Amino acid sequence: MSQLPLCPHCLEPVRSGYHGSCPNCGKSLENHNPEARCPLAPNWAGITPWVNTRAPTATACATAVWIMMTSVCADQRVFPGNAVQWPQPDGDLMPKEGREVLFKTSRMDFKDLYDDLHRITPATGLSQILDVMEENNTVYAVEETEKGMTLTHYLKLRARTLTPVEARTLLQPVMEGVALLHKAGLIHRGICPDNILLPIDGAARLTGYGTLALRTAGSELKSQLYPGYAAPEQYSAAEFSGRYTDVYALAAVTYRLVTGQVPVAAPQRKVRDSMENAHSLESGVPTYFLRC
Image 1 (cartoon, rainbow, N blue to C red):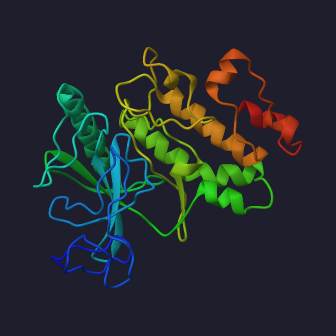
Image 2 (image 1 turned 90 degrees about the vertical axis):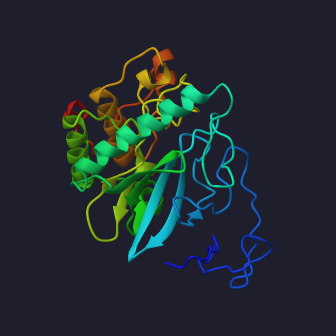
C-alpha cells in the first residue's frame, strides 16, 4: 500500500497532501465535513482511508472505506460526536472536557460489541467482522463489504411487492444470523431494509451493528433509530430491550416486503394504533401469515 495520502475521490496517491485539488482527478481536497464529523481522509492507525461523508458519523462511529489487498473493507471507528474533540495532530481522539466518562464507556461498549461479532462471524446472514484494533486512543472494527445493494434499494427497483414465500426465502439467512446473535447474548436493535445487504452473489446479510446507547432514545449519545422498524422500548432509556426487540424489527421488515408500505412508527402506534394489517392491504397475504 502506498505511503502517500490517497485522494478521497479517486484513491490515487497525492504527493502535495490535502491541499487544493487532486492532480489526478481534479476534485477538491478541502475538508467540508460538518462539525462533529471526521475530517477529510484522516490517517487512522497508519492507514489513509477514503471517508464517506454521507455516513452517520455524528453518532457513535465514523465510516471509512479503503482498498486492502483485494477486499473492500469498511472501518467502523468509535466517534461519539458530542464527546470528542477533533483528532489531534498525531491522530489521537481526545474527550471533551466533562465528557471523559461518556467517551470511555462508548469506546468500551464499542470494543466489547465488535470483539463478540469478530468471534462469531463469518456466519450465515451476518456481515463479517475481519478485525478489531485499538489505535489513536480509539477502537477500529474492520468489516468486509460486498458488491450488491441494500434491501431498501432493491425494493425501490421492484415493480411489485413480494409474496409471503418470497419474503421468507429472502429473510431466512438474516433470521438465522439474528438467531446466532441472540445465542451469543447480542441484540442488533437496528434491523431494517437499510441494514440488510443483498450481495450480487450470495444470500442476504445483516449489517449496521450498533451499541445499546446508539440504538436507544434518551441516552447520552445521539440515537440512531429507524422509524417503523425500531421497537417501542427503544424510544425510552427507562425500558429494557431484548430478543423481542429484534423480533419486532424482523416482523416490520416482513410487513414492508409483503405490503410495500413502511410500518407506522412505534411511538405513534402506542398513542393510536391505526396500522392496517398486511391482509387488508394485500389480499394475497393469507391470514395465517399474520400469526407467524
